Image 1 (cartoon, rainbow, N blue to C red):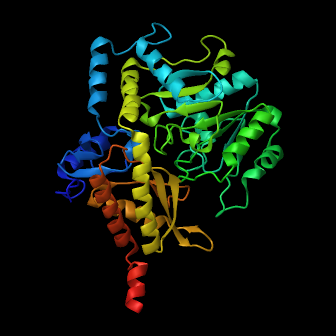
Image 2 (cartoon, rainbow, N blue to C red):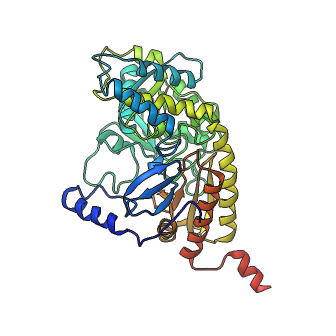
Image 3 (tube, rainbow, N blue to C red):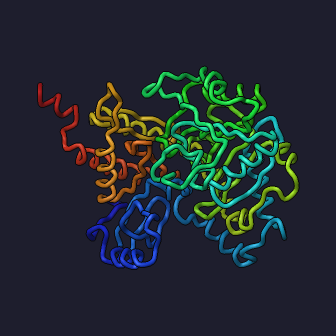
Amino acid sequence: MKHTLIKTELPGPASRALAARRKACSASPMESLAPFYIKSGRGAVLEDVDGNKFLDFTGGWGCLVTGYSPERVVRAVQEQAGHFLHSDFTVIPYEPWIELAEMLAKKAAGKTEKAVAFFNSGAEALENAVKIARGATRRRGVVVFEGAFHGRTLLTMTMTHRPMPYKFVFGTAPDICRLPYPNPRRNKYAARDFEKLLLENICPEDVAAVVIEPIQGEGGFNVPPEGFLQEIRRVTSKHGILMVADEVQSGYGRTGKFFAIENWGVEPDLITLGKSIAGGLPLSAVVGDKKLFDALPKSSIGSTYGGNPVACAAAIEIIKMIDNEKLLERALYLGKIIRHRFEGFKGKYPAVKDVRGVGAMLAIEFIKDEGTWSPDTETCQKVIQEARDCGVILAGAGLDRNVIRLLLPLVITDEQLVEGLDIIDKAIAAAVKAQPRGARAKKAR
């Protein structure tokens, strides 16, 4: 292997030493996927403190569309840090905020004039999108969906579906209504049923916003059925409800469009952004109809660190990279390669039952019994471990933890991608401990 290198046991001695220090002082619920500790990263490759090299297909849980440490972003961060590290924009404003807001407003095409507000995290962006929706509509209810992930704050944790580990005994926020997400393998709901389900569960006059991920992330890269997002737009417009697209994970080019929702030709009222917006620096945004912001009192939204100038400087360069390096087109190109290989896995390994996603935002699902569609969590988790031990870091997903999703950097080289997919192939073979279908059929003949 050219780009991966495992030269010590995992974790290596330097990582074990750090783990011992961590155990003595760090909060134990802050669990890590990898047992080793990173030293450096470039593009899609990282090196740990013991000199092992890995291909990171998790992208820091989706924050690295442009990869580790892009040179132009590093230079912009260094230059801005040399001028000033911080000023609360609501006290003393600065140009990087304005420049980034102009760029995002321009990206959010549609009929309405757009405005932008910056915060620190995806969850904080969702919190503020709900505040904006409630302030603009004078309503309190928020509708979300099965399989959703919107964050870990009290409100967004309530909006998130999976109970463990996100909700535990932490309590929940009021005024949240959860509706089924149409899934032909798990339920009989169709796109046209959305209005009926809404009216059966909550009075639309009480609903401020319907919040939906254009493609569910943590939920398993679930792609909406044909017409579903369009129906949500129709129904919300009919009842004076705002449509909020949570693009914290799906945005910034993974699907071949800057905003994933562009794939369905729908213009939401508000879009939330985070993760890859600043290449890993803490930054998030709410982008939407300027009239909604203008309806709020002055100083009713804000954040001390939101839109930090160093993060804004990085974010400006991220958008320039996406445009100049044609990363939207590359997402589609990478997606074709990945889908071809994933479909091959589906044909070879009985445990791989589904391939889904858009562009480079693709996933495979592991199932025990196709008739009952029962999840094969054990095989999925074994594949993740096997791949990690061979040099590829993978992200799991799905309510049953039986999905592998790719959040790889769009700057990954063709050679790196093929090497990583080869390792995943071998990891599945090792995990299922069975011959591929084709080999069995050949032997039978």
